[in-house]
Length: 369
Image 1 (cartoon, rainbow, N blue to C red):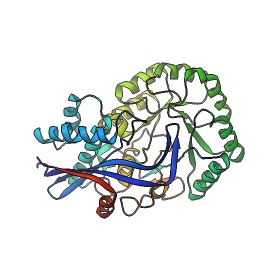
Image 2 (image 1 turned 90 degrees about the horizontal axis):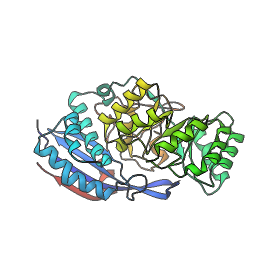
Image 3 (image 1 turned 135 degrees about the horizontal axis):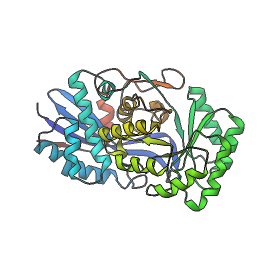
């Protein structure tokens, strides 16, 4: 069979509550939905590039350009329908992992729907539920942060990740530990520190954190390795892991003891599974990070997190954590305290609501073979 058409939608969704990291504060999210149509079926993918080049060098504008002008023509010209074939063919273009991943995810969803199987079955998943944590941004005050943590704990979340930055770290962790001494707690710096602040970061060892995520900028594998040797708390790399090769280098250099896998950041599921398998052979556990996806992208992540080496609670909270009205129905929710059930329908296994997609769309384009 051949693909009938591919549609791109640029969407904007407002957050329930602002989300602040070391990059700054955001009140909404702009992202791209890719839909591939073939013989009455539709495969959905989500490109997680953001409006500004903060987390990544990619943006929604650059991703739209690369998908429309390079990746989709490649698919049409080579009559590609298999995601593995697309992964190999797309290597001709350098970088642009988020753009590549968005289209690959849609191909995977389409493939699983044609087979009548949930994606987790195609990918070798072993779980029907995955442990889910929640990520809490930087707040205006410590009491406000503690109140938000209390709210999420009351909803059933058992692991909390906080965002930290210079000036919002040691005292914050101390306040949380005083109130919640047994809480599964981790901290994410989003690359906001430098090696000159290593002694300050070592103070975080006091708080028995599950991990500290990405203290230094993405390119700094060597300084991460020096910091990890000085700390008892495991370091986890996020922005640094952009491919299988960077993951291998990080582990061989001792730059981290845990790896965060984000499908968009590494360029798709094929590369994500390569990283997963290598980390497993190396004895290093992984977990699935989130990019504040809609329910469409979140569903892909849930299926990925069923693979056996996902050892830690994932940043895959319920739809209501970020959005008043998600793009799917029913919304993703906790199936029991600390867990989310993986959708068991064909493909991503969730039901997109087209009216909501159209309502949130700010730009649309239909691409034909």
